Length: 89
Image (cartoon, rainbow, N blue to C red; front, side):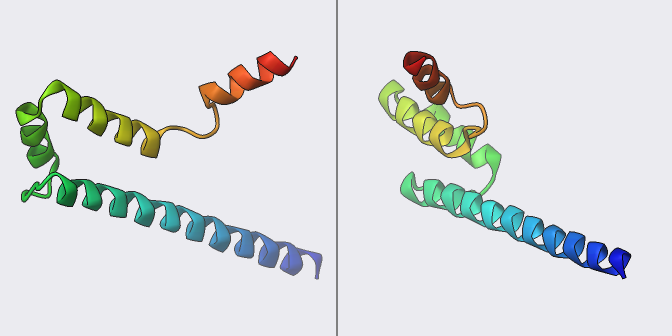
């Protein structure tokens, strides 16, 4: 009986993990789709994005780069969090 309960709990945990991963993938796909629409990129591929970046001026490029960094930054090792922790100590 213990094994079946353990298997059930692990199965539920696996389903929850898969759901979280799928949710994050959908959010990121929606973000990239919004970037394509915002900048008027018709070719929905990395090549279309690269062509648009080549056409941008420095200010637009920095803005786009900031958006991507904010969206795709790793949340586990955030630099701001480390700075705050060292300032408190």
